Image (cartoon, rainbow, N blue to C red):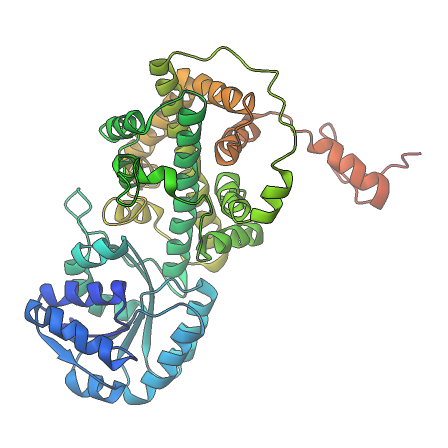
Amino acid sequence: MSINQLGVIGLGTMGANIARNAARNGTKVAVYNRTTEVTKDFMKQFEGEGNFASCESYEDMVKALHGERAFLIMVKAGPAVDAVIADLTPHLQKGDIIIDAGNSHYPDTERRVEELKEKGIRFLGMGVSGGEVGALEGPSMMPGGDKSAWEDCKDLLSKMAADDGLGGKCVAYIGEGGSGHFVKMVHNGVEYGIMQLLAETYDVLKNVAGYSNEQLAETFAAWNEGEDLQSFLVEITAKVFEKKDDINDGHLIDKIHDVAGQKGTGKWTTISALHYGVAIPTINAAVDARIMSGSEELRAEHRKDPVRTDLEEPLPKPEQMRSIARSALHLSVLTAYEQGFELMKVASKEHNWDLNLSECARIWLGGCIIRSVLLKVYSDAFSEDVSRQKTAAMYKEQQWSGEKQVHLRLFLELSTSRGIATPSTSAAMNYFDTLHRKDLPQSLVQAQRDFFGAHTFKRKDKNGVFHVEWE
């Protein structure tokens, strides 16, 4: 069967736009919000956009939708989702579908899938990316959980999803359990990494090269036209630098407080990477950078500490500086994607999710926040087509083997010698260098562990496990 009736619970900006998106694509949509006035306001504004039914209770919603139906929850992740499920479930019949489209933590989704299966209710945990505009005009959607529920919702969700630019839609079944929300979590972790890399590039161009806001806007706009950095985040970054302050003179960027917020998905990504034993230093550094930006008392305490910049090097000319920064950003963004896909690969193996990483990259090509021309590389890299795999491998090798790597190292020298922190860019370089070293200094760590704890070690020249008396 194919679902053509949808109940939407939670009419905040995202929920309201998801409901409008579904209605615009020919679906009957019953809408409900805990605060009745919000539902009434929604109907006043958008009733003419499609076939809506206004509901003041879950009982009203169930009565408004007959036959094959799904109920999409768009409320704050955590206990609120459980509360909605607990209140909604008694009104449902076996075979009904619940879709959690919020940013839920994937272990919660795993639990909900199993709990609802026992009651005969099919559950999808679906990551949704694209912000409020994407929710209305076409997001990227990552549904995981009950596969039969996906099959029944596939046509509806495909109509609602963004185009991928390749003739497809930015939605695909991710896998069982909490896999959909896991992939969305990693998406957000990569998003943290790229945003921090853009911020560091801005910092160096402004405070080392002396770029004005007008020059920054023009630089990022030009980069967004290229085949290496074209992406949603680069595009909006250029627009940020153009924005004038409507309260005082000057540009708005210079008036915004430098404390970055976060809602938890970045930290979840870091915790998950530690759990699965996957190194994601570019992303971890971005999470740390947000935490440090909010440590205002600590920052104030250390602001008086002396900064020695005796190692200053001659500054490249502005156009050369632009080329250096572009190369550094491009290679660093590649490592953010690389780390995200590695994390998904390892988690997929541990949970037997059988993630199609090529499809994950493809459905991020449109609608979502990290959409980028570079995702075509990763769609190819994880494809079953050997020629596509080779093309992707060749692309990545070419980027790192030429002048760009030299530029990345110079970018870090220029920033470090002037006391400007570039944690995610530095982590990207260290990630690359660690993976390409034949011998790592952790041989000393193993010797130390054996020295004080008899933890043993392996040798390069003999098989087996060894322990020695060090003194």
